[in-house]
Length: 430
Ligand SMILES: [Zn+2]
Image (cartoon, rainbow, N blue to C red; front, top):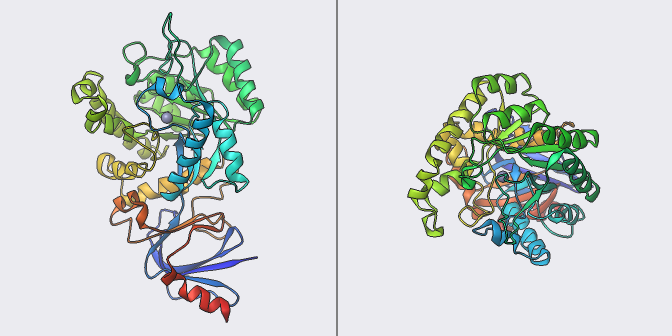
């Protein structure tokens, strides 16, 4: 079994503790040993990577990914993409996020029914590069839900599956489970992007529809995710055991109490980036500041930050990332979310990176035993070597050039430059 020792690094192990100098031994696809300070791990028969003081951290885990969202401007443009082109775009996006250190993604909706499923299978088989992937359905919407693109007398489609009533929800969720998804996504609330017909205060699925979809998913051992901005959509997500509650923008104190009582079961990804960018940087795409204020995106961002602070105080798991994959918020910019967690919400860089690694790894396990997101003996070897200290400057992670090494499952996707591997060759040849 191949063994690699990454030596002379500062280790941020994802546990929430301070980083420390040390070295890490990888054997096969798992972390075998972690040495602190001056302790040394035996070098016999081991390939050595010289870290030269760079930071070694666990791979990032995104629990609100949309790898098949094609960085386009409108819902209809996504619907107009033929499946063949769309698959290739998804493959490219998977590579882009891996190059930015995302070694695991829980999808929060595919743009067409089989895109995530095929992408996951190709990545797992080692035929295309990409993160470990939990494949998701498209967003289930009731008629008039936030992503219903249709118009009377006109044909439009986007990235949704429309269903109405418990019978249709049951049938269509079963169909997606037959096709091979890991996660079922329900759009339970509206969104201000879809105002006025389905703004974020509206709950757009009926309880019997949610109950039917969740009953099928739970009975088949599949995870669930929800688009839930309104108070009642968040409460319904908790009531029906939906593990991934996305956005969770406007919970009442009563709903926060409910979520806190069930906090071991849920995690929340607010996805601050898309709101921030639409509010401040999307004028070039026709989304003026005026439009953003009219659609109350300033209030949405403020509420999302305030809710994230309240939730973490209550011990509810909140994680960065989400909703990258539109023109003004493209794949590869995901790590800006880490900066928003520090500068807009007020979490420390260490807290933020713990959320993006350890907490993400726990959520990725979908209720099983976590084996991702920490540098810890026995855990899977998804490791990043960063040029500099992201705890001092979290924006370092926004530039793929700063990723000196990207290891997934014990294999180097990006190998360190020859200088750092010099010693590796010499020792290996001895
Ligand atoms: Zn999303």
